[in-house]
Length: 585
Image (tube, rainbow, N blue to C red; front, side, top):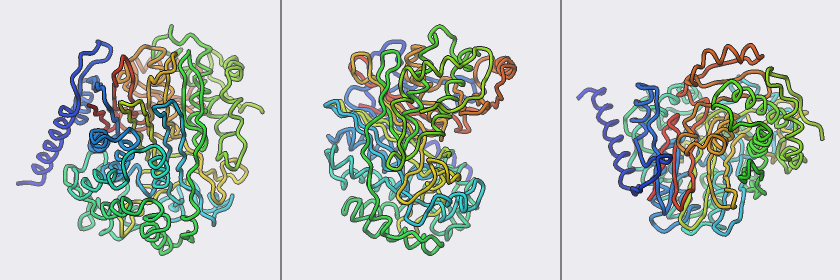
């Protein structure tokens, strides 16, 4: 049997298993034409889009519970918890652990993130478990060691103290219903039994190959065999990760990681590579429980992540600006729509750059930035015929190595989680004993020591991650969503919300619709499949926009996962830009 044939066979078997799992877990329902009850496996959907230029709808409908995640095996891990009687919190954490196995380039116990929670009794909670700067850094640290393009990005110099396990334990102890030992079981099973190497993972492993070799003994890299990359379709096993998860299940985050053997292994390896990080840095790590950002868009309540996320503020500010324009009367992705949205994004992003940082270190004018009056004033400066340079109001950047998942249960608990290593594979260092890869979260700080986002001991770097929820005009759950994609997360979340509210799209249509992105400068990025894109580019360029076209599948525009709540049912959808899938029962 040739290697090529074995790869094809493995891929076909894996694809069949995924489709079979989805068909077994979802319950068929009669739904309206605007919410089709149809699921197609990720691989099938991607092939269909590439061949026909269209996307097959894949909304999954359920009543009891729903998980939408960036990998089908991770979504199934969350669903397993719901079926065992766990709640949405339990399911979300099981999904996150499973993603550490099957999508470990994007997140894991060596990284950090945010959890946004809407409880069954109506409470809204934001858990900030971003990585924290160790005691040895100072305000000039990034300028000295982590300039853009410096090899230090993929080295010990970029590693912050991870927050994922502390965040998970915080939310589980307060709002979960199952023990940690139960929640890690699906991830342990996946790590021991293995999973097929996906196209997505194969591509980005190849791009990181040199970094793997520079930072590790090749025997410690799970994507290498005899120093060569594992090929697409071949089975990957992660026994070292399984060992770590068992320890976490037995001893908890503090006993296993922050004061235990996993953390000691990480500190030992970083010290060997030249980092002065210590176990005291790990013992000092604390989760921040924060008040969510809230706003209202055309009567719908927006609940989103507060700083150290810049996302919630930027989404609310952008939507507040767009509320001053008759968006519903415009054609989606028309020149008028693209132009005004880009100009609104510019305002939100320049304010983000100027004002937003770790609130434990800086005062942030949140009330001003999220107010309707401030947005009205800013909207008056937008010209309908010309792109303008913007300045901050008066009173860093991530890459796309991030993942998002949304979970809902029958009791009314809703969880939105976005977690990251920052760049794909983070610092490209794998723990030699426990198999997880380390973050490069120190790159999230500014290299300008005068910036509010300059690094300091114990500080968290600014993030674009934007787990978000939307309540309807009666205050009932309407939508939960989020995306990976660096600063494009903010663009994606804003557009999906607007697509549903302004353009009456169902959740799958809202995710799959062509996207644009832009920050505070004139560069406007457009997906190449926008209808009549060539003529629109010509008009927008004459208005002063600098246009760059991007292909749908280079992941630039993110990979959203979302759940919509309607008529007592859950409608899950996952982005075909990535390997996402929604499962429910």
